[in-house]
Amino acid sequence: MKAVQYQQVGTKPVVVEVPKPEPGPGQVLLRVTAAGMCHSDLEVMSWSADQSPFELPLVLGHEGVGTVAELGPGVRGVTEGESVAVYGPWGCGVCRNCAQGKENYCTRNEELDIRPPGLGRPGAMAEYLLVDDVRHLVPLDGLDPVQAAPLTDAGLTPYHAIKRSVPKLVGGSTAVVIGAGGLGHLAVQILRATTAARVIALDLTDEKLELARKVGAHEVARSDESAPARIRELTGGLGADVVLDFVGIAPTVKLAAQSVAIAGDITIVGIGGAPLPVGFGLLPYEVSVASPYWGSRSELIEVLDLARSGALRAHVETFGLDETPEVYERLRAGEITGRAVIVP
Image (cartoon, rainbow, N blue to C red; front, side):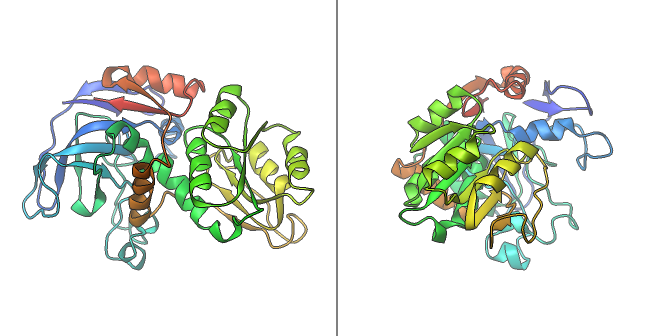
């Protein structure tokens, strides 16, 4: 089968032929119908040999949707031909967090070397994907696979991040979205669909700001040095009740700190890795800071339900499997607005 592999540190991904997987006991083989492309893939490919925890070569793609092609011995709960989305952050299934469906916070995944598809295990940018357990599949129930694929991460991650702050997002509140790209444009829609907050979207490119406005942002502004003052102006000097940073680099975490209100939330979702100093006098009183990861299995079901209702729709560009290496270069150059989806 064809697959997109990252083969060596410092090289570009390539399209290769690899053996088609065979499902073992408890496993499910999917014929991939859509796979989302993510900035996290670029991060993986930027690591040095000392930084990378993954064995190479690695088939990329952690946003996967497909139809059930084969069932391993003992599998129940899905049928061949059924369309399903893949819940990506696999866990052990039995620890305290996994028992609550929070496999994104599995306490034993490092010990047991359990890794997500595309982030340590063969991923979805291939003609077939092997899924370790039926519990990691969610029925699409009529959703378009191309729309559903990005929702497994680019939809689930902001949904999880926003959900922790819902008690603060009441009438008269303000939420700021820093970075209106793949995750950010979905965050705007989730905020509009699930909260009463006024939504302000920030970005550096006109195309992404226009997309944010199109999908529901009440206000948009450039995420430059003038942004904190603009947010204070729009909030009567109070600042934003919730700031969601989907970039995570030094200028954006600084912007978040300058924009948040007393007792507000700062949630750093982006993987830029910049630190945010926290302590008395460094932020407004009682500001809460979090850096969440992905989301729970039950939250993925909720995200797909939102999409099915029409409240959530990813802005996507589609490409063939053979185009994937070139599309990664476009993503690196900031030329993708919304989400790129690979259709094998």
